[in-house]
Image (cartoon, rainbow, N blue to C red; front, side, top):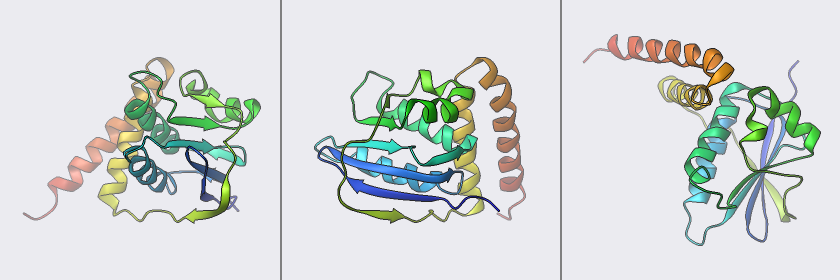
Length: 172
């Protein structure tokens, strides 16, 4: 039986911390992405830490979501607004196989949370939107090049073909 998964949000002095408990998968990643985009586009430049301390597993869609957020908010130059937090051994175990531990901004722990944490329920997407989310996540990983391109590029290409096939079979 899979480990239960949960995303929770806590306030910090500078912004927010999202804790990923259990597994971070394509089921949780749309909710993280939607929350992160809303927060990081807020006026006042709040920060967002993604705490992986209690995370056991991240699938490729969740990893690609983290990479997409990095590309949007940090790649042009470190702003300090987005960070992935957790003990070094946890971050290396979860991010090391894709080498994201050498790319993403990391910190040993989230800033202190103020008040109670609130759950973020998984975001329900229809199959086409979920397919586009999975496709985008795998493209972000393929863009890293090297072994990531060899593994995730064909997956992204197959998903794109499937989405095109589905779109072509719909009545006009």
